[in-house]
Length: 248
Image 1 (spheres, rainbow, N blue to C red):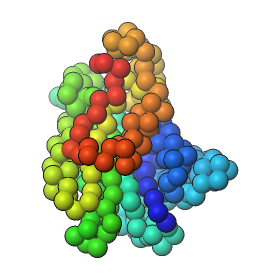
Image 2 (image 1 turned 45 degrees about the vertical axis):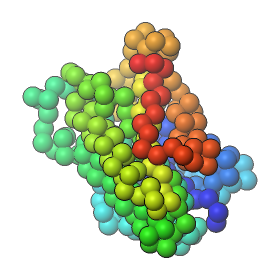
Image 3 (image 1 turned 180 degrees about the vertical axis):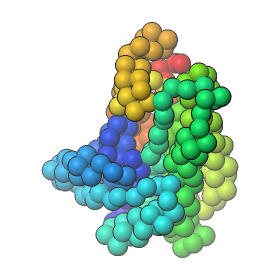
């Protein structure tokens, strides 16, 4: 298997768009999902119907044992990864910090931060020339919230994405001489169903006037940036934080 990408949270939104685009670009794709097997299976079906190779693999990225089992399953079917997209993430209901429960804050960091670190750890163990690998590329999905702060909405989410930015820069430097590039995209207001899970299904439309380009972005527009960063076209790019925000 020449090029193999794992996309966490790959069953919907930006993850699904990235899976489909990566497959068209020639990657075999492992589509990770937590609970929605039907959505993941549909992404796999679309990839296979287009002549590509794909598998769906269940794992909660916040659980170390499940992450390790997921990588083992991918190894068994396709061999070691050459690319990872850390896309799995959650938001929560709009809230001020002084009204947030500890359980909410813990979940935010377990999935958005710990999950990305665990998946990157396993990817580096397979990609790094230090471990006998042949190199690879990692793209973390951060958010413009990391620099905007999301006051009055979800400062916890913004904080978690700020951690992802720092992680991206640090890991990029750590493995740059081992054949691995690490970058992040920071989407702005994107038309996906993550807003509904945060209790604001119309958020993208409502905030569009605040965007200099006067519209929300699409999942495919973010996917284009991710797949470019994964590719050899970005061969001298590492440690970059690429805003995909319409100027916001």
